[in-house]
Amino acid sequence: MFPIPCVVSDTSPLISLEKITGGFSFARKLYKKIIIPNEVGKELGKGLNLTPELYLQHHSISDFVEIQNCTVNIALLGITHRKIHQGEAEAITLAHSLTLPLLIDEDRGTKVAELNGLQTLILISHLVKSYRLGIQEKQELIEKLDDLFIAKRLQESIYKALRISL
Image (cartoon, rainbow, N blue to C red; front, top):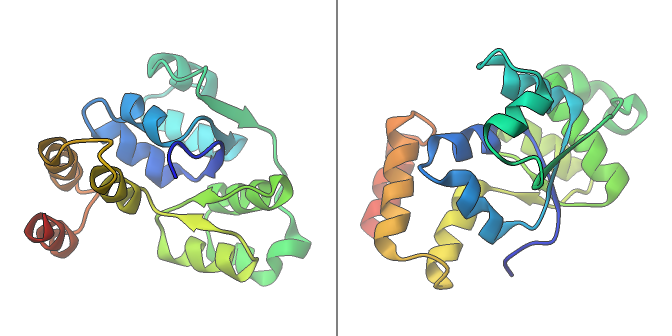
């Protein structure tokens, strides 16, 4: 199952990886390559006041995350493109055009992607699966969950349920 050869990602999973100590290094065990649309790159760099390219350099992931230009496909998304953010719309369009799975965490964007026939992936489920497959130890997973919870990237109810299940 891991590493998955290539995925397209929305902004949220990458922000979550930022919040995990060693998150991008660990992501390399899950995915060989991540492709993002330009808008996602802009959203990522915005918090640090960086261009998308400088954001990738700042996190030492220029060799791992690729930015591609993308124009939202209105014909594909129909009126649903108005219900999601620009980055999500571009990520869905890009994943569809490249026939790749989409790493996305937002409910609304996930529904739109699935309505358009895309395979959607959720970062937190990959973190748990990687533990169950022996890619990381239990304590490593707990630390990642703690990082996400402290950074408010994981709801308390999900955090507690995952901690109990371990």
